[in-house]
Length: 281
Image (cartoon, rainbow, N blue to C red; front, side, top):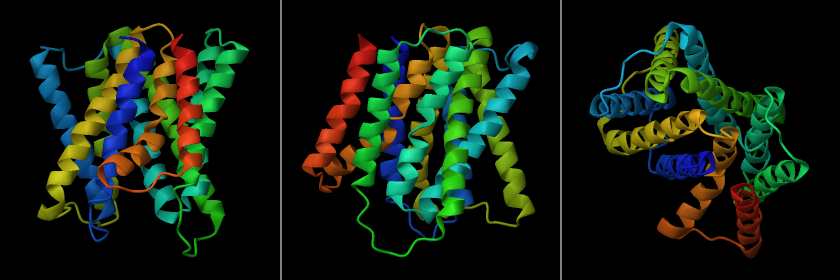
C-alpha cells in the first residue's frame, strides 16, 4: 500500500472522528473528552500490538523522537480544539489545512526531490479543502478577536506537521507500533497532568462515552496509518493526503446528516481530488 493511500485512510478516519464530534453535547468537558479519545485510541493500539505480537518499546535511539512526536500531537490537538472553538471556520480551516506545505518542506530539507508540479498538486489540495470548509461556515455569531484564533490554528498546523514528520522518522528506524505507542502515551500523560493541575474534570459523563469511543478508535487507526508510511517511498504524501480530513468531514455530513453541499463546494472537492490524483501517478 502506498503512503498516499495510507494518508487517505487516515483522512477518512479523522473525518469520521470529526463528524462524531457533532454528537457530543456542548456541556461535555472538553479536556475530559480529549483525554478519553486519546485513551481509547491507546487501548485500541495495544490490542493491535498484541495481535501482531509487537515489541512494546522502540529502540532507545528513537525514544526521544517518538516522545517529541507525542508532545507535538497534543499540541496539534489542543490547537485544533481551541481554534475551532473560537472560529470562524473560514479563517481556521485554511490555516490548519496548510500543514502539508510544512511536511513537504521538511521532506525536501531531508533530501526528497519535490517537483514544481508536485508542489502545485499539494497547493491544489489545500485550496480545495479550504474552499469546501470555508463555504460550510454559515454562522453569523460574533467571533472573538482573531489574533488568538490564528495563533491556535498555526499551533495546530505546526503540531500536525511535526507529529507526522518525527513519527515517521522514528517509525522508519524502529517500527510504527512501538513508536506510536510512545507518542500516544506521552500525549496522554501531559494532558492528564494539565487537567490535574488546572483542576478540570477527568470524567466526560456516561452519555458521551459511546461516541468518544468511536472517535478514539478512529483516531487510533489514523495516527497508525500515518506512521506506517514511514517505511515507504514518498512518506510525506501520507501527511499530505491526511489533510483531506476537513473536506471528508463535510462530505460525510452531507451523506449521513443530510447537510447541504453547494456547487462551489463540490468544485472544491474536485480541485482537492485532482491534486491527490496527480500525486498518485
